[in-house]
Image 1 (cartoon, protein in one colour):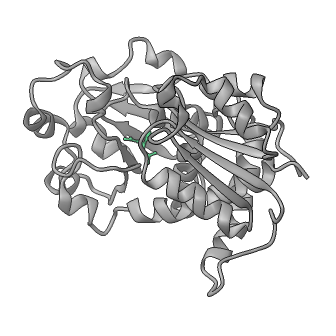
Image 2: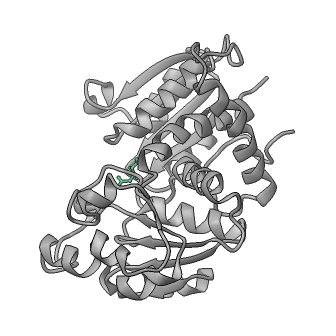
Length: 305
Ligand code: NCD
Protein backbone atom coordinates (compact mmCIF):
# COMPACT_ATOMS: atom_id res chain seq x y z
CA UNK A 1 0.00 0.00 0.00
CA UNK A 2 1.22 3.48 -0.90
CA UNK A 3 0.20 7.04 -0.17
CA UNK A 4 -1.26 9.04 -3.02
CA UNK A 5 1.50 11.69 -2.82
CA UNK A 6 5.28 11.47 -2.46
CA UNK A 7 5.34 14.45 -0.11
CA UNK A 8 3.46 15.27 3.09
CA UNK A 9 2.71 18.97 2.83
CA UNK A 10 -0.60 19.20 4.66
CA UNK A 11 -3.86 17.43 5.40
CA UNK A 12 -5.88 19.71 3.14
CA UNK A 13 -7.32 17.45 0.47
CA UNK A 14 -5.59 14.32 1.76
CA UNK A 15 -7.88 11.35 1.11
CA UNK A 16 -9.27 9.41 4.09
CA UNK A 17 -7.54 6.26 2.80
CA UNK A 18 -4.14 7.95 3.13
CA UNK A 19 -4.88 9.08 6.68
CA UNK A 20 -6.10 5.59 7.57
CA UNK A 21 -2.99 4.00 6.07
CA UNK A 22 -0.71 6.27 8.12
CA UNK A 23 -2.64 5.60 11.33
CA UNK A 24 -2.65 1.83 10.75
CA UNK A 25 1.04 1.76 9.91
CA UNK A 26 1.74 3.78 13.06
CA UNK A 27 0.12 1.04 15.15
CA UNK A 28 2.75 -1.48 14.09
CA UNK A 29 5.55 1.02 14.69
CA UNK A 30 4.20 1.82 18.14
CA UNK A 31 4.62 -1.82 19.01
CA UNK A 32 8.33 -1.50 18.16
CA UNK A 33 8.65 1.47 20.55
CA UNK A 34 7.58 -0.78 23.41
CA UNK A 35 10.27 -3.38 22.71
CA UNK A 36 13.55 -3.44 24.66
CA UNK A 37 15.44 -2.81 21.39
CA UNK A 38 13.53 -0.03 19.66
CA UNK A 39 15.09 -0.19 16.24
CA UNK A 40 14.29 -1.75 12.86
CA UNK A 41 16.41 -1.73 9.68
CA UNK A 42 13.57 -0.40 7.47
CA UNK A 43 15.30 2.79 6.24
CA UNK A 44 18.88 1.56 6.35
CA UNK A 45 20.95 3.35 3.72
CA UNK A 46 18.49 6.27 3.40
CA UNK A 47 19.57 9.76 4.40
CA UNK A 48 17.17 12.26 5.89
CA UNK A 49 17.89 15.93 6.58
CA UNK A 50 15.97 17.81 9.23
CA UNK A 51 15.90 21.46 8.14
CA UNK A 52 14.66 23.51 11.08
CA UNK A 53 14.41 27.24 10.43
CA UNK A 54 12.22 27.79 13.48
CA UNK A 55 12.46 26.77 17.13
CA UNK A 56 11.24 23.35 18.11
CA UNK A 57 11.84 20.84 20.87
CA UNK A 58 9.28 18.05 20.58
CA UNK A 59 8.86 17.96 16.84
CA UNK A 60 12.59 17.98 16.09
CA UNK A 61 13.43 15.33 18.65
CA UNK A 62 10.42 13.28 17.60
CA UNK A 63 11.42 13.28 13.92
CA UNK A 64 15.01 12.49 14.78
CA UNK A 65 14.03 9.58 17.02
CA UNK A 66 11.64 8.28 14.36
CA UNK A 67 14.42 8.43 11.75
CA UNK A 68 16.98 6.74 13.98
CA UNK A 69 14.55 4.01 15.03
CA UNK A 70 14.09 3.24 11.35
CA UNK A 71 17.93 3.12 10.98
CA UNK A 72 18.10 6.07 8.56
CA UNK A 73 21.18 8.29 8.47
CA UNK A 74 20.22 11.64 9.95
CA UNK A 75 21.61 15.11 9.38
CA UNK A 76 20.34 18.01 11.45
CA UNK A 77 20.35 21.56 10.24
CA UNK A 78 19.21 24.45 12.35
CA UNK A 79 19.41 28.01 11.25
CA UNK A 80 21.62 29.19 14.12
CA UNK A 81 25.23 28.66 13.06
CA UNK A 82 24.36 28.06 9.38
CA UNK A 83 25.06 30.00 6.18
CA UNK A 84 21.53 31.40 6.31
CA UNK A 85 22.99 34.13 8.49
CA UNK A 86 25.34 34.89 5.56
CA UNK A 87 22.33 35.51 3.33
CA UNK A 88 21.93 32.15 1.61
CA UNK A 89 18.43 31.50 0.27
CA UNK A 90 16.30 28.49 1.19
CA UNK A 91 16.60 27.26 -2.38
CA UNK A 92 20.40 27.36 -2.33
CA UNK A 93 20.63 25.85 1.15
CA UNK A 94 18.35 23.00 0.14
CA UNK A 95 20.01 22.33 -3.23
CA UNK A 96 23.45 22.30 -1.69
CA UNK A 97 22.37 19.84 0.94
CA UNK A 98 20.65 17.73 -1.69
CA UNK A 99 23.82 17.66 -3.79
CA UNK A 100 25.23 15.54 -0.96
CA UNK A 101 22.75 12.80 -1.97
CA UNK A 102 19.93 12.86 0.50
CA UNK A 103 16.60 11.06 0.14
CA UNK A 104 14.16 13.06 2.27
CA UNK A 105 13.85 16.50 3.80
CA UNK A 106 11.87 17.36 6.91
CA UNK A 107 11.24 21.11 6.95
CA UNK A 108 10.05 23.51 9.61
CA UNK A 109 9.84 27.15 8.61
CA UNK A 110 8.15 30.31 9.83
CA UNK A 111 6.78 31.09 6.36
CA UNK A 112 3.65 29.35 5.10
CA UNK A 113 4.16 27.49 1.83
CA UNK A 114 7.91 26.83 2.11
CA UNK A 115 7.48 23.01 1.99
CA UNK A 116 5.51 23.36 -1.27
CA UNK A 117 8.22 25.62 -2.64
CA UNK A 118 10.88 23.12 -1.66
CA UNK A 119 9.20 20.35 -3.67
CA UNK A 120 9.81 22.48 -6.75
CA UNK A 121 13.53 22.96 -6.18
CA UNK A 122 14.70 19.59 -4.82
CA UNK A 123 14.09 16.02 -5.92
CA UNK A 124 13.84 14.57 -2.41
CA UNK A 125 10.54 13.79 -0.76
CA UNK A 126 9.48 16.61 1.54
CA UNK A 127 7.73 16.35 4.91
CA UNK A 128 6.23 19.49 6.42
CA UNK A 129 7.10 19.76 10.13
CA UNK A 130 5.15 23.03 10.51
CA UNK A 131 5.06 26.01 8.13
CA UNK A 132 4.15 29.36 9.63
CA UNK A 133 0.44 29.73 10.29
CA UNK A 134 -0.41 27.15 7.66
CA UNK A 135 -0.21 23.42 8.49
CA UNK A 136 1.45 20.96 10.83
CA UNK A 137 0.28 17.66 9.37
CA UNK A 138 2.24 15.22 11.54
CA UNK A 139 0.92 16.92 14.69
CA UNK A 140 -2.66 16.49 13.49
CA UNK A 141 -1.97 12.88 12.51
CA UNK A 142 -0.60 12.11 15.97
CA UNK A 143 -3.57 13.87 17.54
CA UNK A 144 -5.94 11.74 15.45
CA UNK A 145 -3.96 8.61 16.29
CA UNK A 146 -4.25 9.42 20.00
CA UNK A 147 -8.01 10.00 19.72
CA UNK A 148 -8.51 6.81 17.75
CA UNK A 149 -6.49 4.83 20.27
CA UNK A 150 -8.55 6.24 23.11
CA UNK A 151 -12.04 6.07 21.58
CA UNK A 152 -11.64 3.35 18.95
CA UNK A 153 -12.99 5.62 16.21
CA UNK A 154 -12.89 9.13 14.78
CA UNK A 155 -16.26 9.07 13.10
CA UNK A 156 -18.79 11.24 14.94
CA UNK A 157 -16.29 11.88 17.71
CA UNK A 158 -16.94 15.32 19.18
CA UNK A 159 -13.68 17.27 19.29
CA UNK A 160 -13.33 20.94 20.17
CA UNK A 161 -10.13 22.83 19.43
CA UNK A 162 -9.73 25.58 22.03
CA UNK A 163 -7.80 28.83 21.96
CA UNK A 164 -5.67 30.61 19.43
CA UNK A 165 -7.17 29.19 16.26
CA UNK A 166 -6.12 32.13 14.11
CA UNK A 167 -2.39 31.65 14.68
CA UNK A 168 -2.33 27.87 14.85
CA UNK A 169 -1.16 25.53 12.14
CA UNK A 170 -2.07 22.68 14.51
CA UNK A 171 -5.70 23.84 14.45
CA UNK A 172 -5.93 24.01 10.68
CA UNK A 173 -4.37 20.58 10.10
CA UNK A 174 -6.60 19.06 12.78
CA UNK A 175 -9.71 20.62 11.25
CA UNK A 176 -8.91 19.28 7.78
CA UNK A 177 -7.98 15.81 9.00
CA UNK A 178 -10.79 15.36 11.49
CA UNK A 179 -13.44 16.51 9.02
CA UNK A 180 -12.14 14.08 6.42
CA UNK A 181 -12.40 11.29 9.00
CA UNK A 182 -15.99 12.19 9.87
CA UNK A 183 -15.48 13.73 13.33
CA UNK A 184 -17.78 16.49 14.64
CA UNK A 185 -15.35 19.39 14.96
CA UNK A 186 -15.81 22.68 16.76
CA UNK A 187 -13.57 25.53 17.84
CA UNK A 188 -13.80 27.77 20.89
CA UNK A 189 -11.97 30.99 21.71
CA UNK A 190 -12.25 34.76 21.77
CA UNK A 191 -13.63 36.22 18.53
CA UNK A 192 -10.29 37.93 17.88
CA UNK A 193 -8.54 34.56 17.74
CA UNK A 194 -11.03 32.82 15.44
CA UNK A 195 -10.80 33.49 11.70
CA UNK A 196 -13.94 34.93 10.17
CA UNK A 197 -16.08 32.50 8.18
CA UNK A 198 -14.31 29.47 9.63
CA UNK A 199 -17.77 27.83 9.87
CA UNK A 200 -17.57 27.40 6.11
CA UNK A 201 -15.11 24.56 6.74
CA UNK A 202 -18.01 22.64 8.30
CA UNK A 203 -17.31 23.30 11.97
CA UNK A 204 -19.18 24.93 14.83
CA UNK A 205 -17.86 28.03 16.59
CA UNK A 206 -18.23 28.67 20.33
CA UNK A 207 -17.16 31.71 22.27
CA UNK A 208 -17.85 30.34 25.75
CA UNK A 209 -15.89 27.38 27.01
CA UNK A 210 -18.67 26.46 29.46
CA UNK A 211 -21.07 26.01 26.53
CA UNK A 212 -18.79 23.57 24.79
CA UNK A 213 -17.56 21.37 27.64
CA UNK A 214 -20.81 19.39 28.10
CA UNK A 215 -21.02 18.73 24.37
CA UNK A 216 -17.66 17.14 23.57
CA UNK A 217 -15.62 13.97 24.03
CA UNK A 218 -12.23 15.68 23.76
CA UNK A 219 -10.71 19.14 23.99
CA UNK A 220 -7.57 19.87 22.02
CA UNK A 221 -6.23 22.89 23.87
CA UNK A 222 -3.81 25.10 21.96
CA UNK A 223 -1.00 27.30 23.12
CA UNK A 224 -1.56 31.03 22.93
CA UNK A 225 0.94 31.86 20.17
CA UNK A 226 2.43 34.95 21.81
CA UNK A 227 5.29 35.11 19.30
CA UNK A 228 2.89 35.26 16.34
CA UNK A 229 0.52 37.87 17.69
CA UNK A 230 0.83 41.57 17.08
CA UNK A 231 -0.61 42.05 20.60
CA UNK A 232 -3.97 43.31 21.75
CA UNK A 233 -5.93 40.18 20.80
CA UNK A 234 -7.16 39.93 24.40
CA UNK A 235 -6.56 42.13 27.43
CA UNK A 236 -4.21 39.99 29.57
CA UNK A 237 -3.16 36.36 29.95
CA UNK A 238 -4.91 36.35 33.32
CA UNK A 239 -8.15 37.42 31.73
CA UNK A 240 -7.75 34.84 28.97
CA UNK A 241 -7.39 32.18 31.65
CA UNK A 242 -10.46 33.42 33.47
CA UNK A 243 -12.67 33.16 30.38
CA UNK A 244 -11.14 30.34 28.35
CA UNK A 245 -8.77 28.48 30.67
CA UNK A 246 -9.55 24.76 30.85
CA UNK A 247 -9.71 24.09 34.60
CA UNK A 248 -10.71 21.22 36.84
CA UNK A 249 -13.71 23.20 38.06
CA UNK A 250 -15.05 23.76 34.58
CA UNK A 251 -14.48 20.16 33.49
CA UNK A 252 -16.09 18.93 36.72
CA UNK A 253 -19.40 20.41 35.60
CA UNK A 254 -19.66 18.00 32.68
CA UNK A 255 -21.38 14.69 33.31
CA UNK A 256 -18.69 12.67 31.55
CA UNK A 257 -14.89 12.75 31.65
CA UNK A 258 -13.36 14.77 28.83
CA UNK A 259 -10.10 13.77 27.23
CA UNK A 260 -7.56 16.59 27.31
CA UNK A 261 -4.99 17.09 24.57
CA UNK A 262 -2.35 19.75 23.98
CA UNK A 263 0.38 19.80 21.31
CA UNK A 264 2.86 21.47 23.67
CA UNK A 265 4.60 23.57 24.73
CA UNK A 266 2.02 24.39 27.43
CA UNK A 267 1.60 27.82 28.96
CA UNK A 268 0.64 26.37 32.33
CA UNK A 269 -2.27 28.14 34.01
CA UNK A 270 -2.99 30.16 30.87
CA UNK A 271 -4.80 27.87 28.42
CA UNK A 272 -4.73 24.87 30.72
CA UNK A 273 -4.49 24.62 34.48
CA UNK A 274 -1.60 22.52 35.76
CA UNK A 275 -3.84 20.00 37.56
CA UNK A 276 -5.74 19.31 34.32
CA UNK A 277 -2.55 19.01 32.26
CA UNK A 278 -1.26 16.42 34.72
CA UNK A 279 -4.68 14.95 35.54
CA UNK A 280 -6.15 11.51 34.87
CA UNK A 281 -7.88 12.48 31.60
CA UNK A 282 -4.87 14.17 30.05
CA UNK A 283 -3.31 12.25 27.15
CA UNK A 284 -0.63 14.86 26.52
CA UNK A 285 2.34 12.56 27.10
CA UNK A 286 0.68 9.78 25.07
CA UNK A 287 0.49 12.28 22.23
CA UNK A 288 4.26 12.73 22.50
CA UNK A 289 4.92 8.99 22.36
CA UNK A 290 2.44 8.50 19.52
CA UNK A 291 4.20 11.29 17.65
CA UNK A 292 7.27 9.11 17.21
CA UNK A 293 5.20 6.16 15.91
CA UNK A 294 3.22 8.37 13.52
CA UNK A 295 6.38 10.02 12.15
CA UNK A 296 7.96 6.61 11.66
CA UNK A 297 4.89 5.64 9.65
CA UNK A 298 5.01 8.79 7.52
CA UNK A 299 8.74 8.44 6.79
CA UNK A 300 8.39 4.74 5.99
CA UNK A 301 5.44 5.31 3.64
CA UNK A 302 7.11 8.21 1.83
CA UNK A 303 10.65 6.86 1.59
CA UNK A 304 11.83 6.26 -1.97
CA UNK A 305 12.49 2.52 -2.32
C1 NCD B 1 3.21 23.31 17.87
C2 NCD B 1 3.91 24.06 16.75
O1 NCD B 1 5.10 24.28 16.80
O2 NCD B 1 3.18 24.41 15.85
N1 NCD B 1 4.05 22.59 18.71
C3 NCD B 1 4.56 21.42 18.32
O3 NCD B 1 4.82 21.18 17.16
N2 NCD B 1 4.70 20.51 19.29
C4 NCD B 1 2.30 24.13 18.62
C5 NCD B 1 2.81 25.34 19.31
O4 NCD B 1 3.89 25.84 19.06
O5 NCD B 1 2.06 25.85 20.15
